[in-house]
Image 1 (cartoon, rainbow, N blue to C red):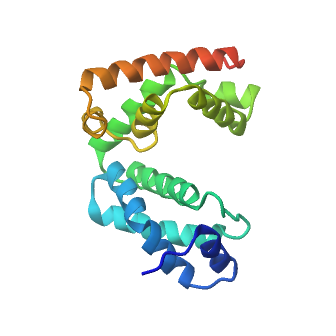
Image 2: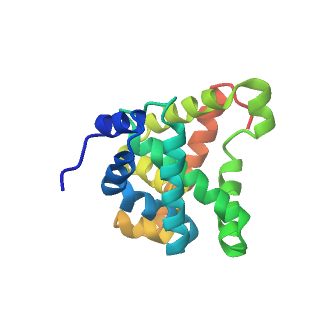
Length: 189
């Protein structure tokens, strides 16, 4: 099996060639399914979200042409679809977990009202990316695994071969640094 590069896959989407979905699935299917499974903890729902991602990508390309960031484009779609599915379902324990993660970040990211009054979400995203650029790779990866992939502290500690205590401490310190960074950028937290 020869995997096409992202630019060629995007070309297939632009040509409305259904092989685009086949090649996308071969190249990124397991990663997208794994991302969805990490959120919903249900294989069938994760597969449905993966398939819904292909449909959403089909409908989004064009106008988007994510040649240089196809996986990130697909992962964002998968994550949003999966979180929406989780919110809509009766997975109360999982919803509580996601809510807890949101509360952790509420202490260092401005509320929506402040963002809408002061700056748009794209500017906030740029500021957060700027902050992530100030972190060393280990801290950045820990934050991303926790708040993008929604990994548990124990999963992160296993992934990076460190104690859960160290992961919790790193997350706590990074959230504080993020809050300080955003305040310096003019956000009211």
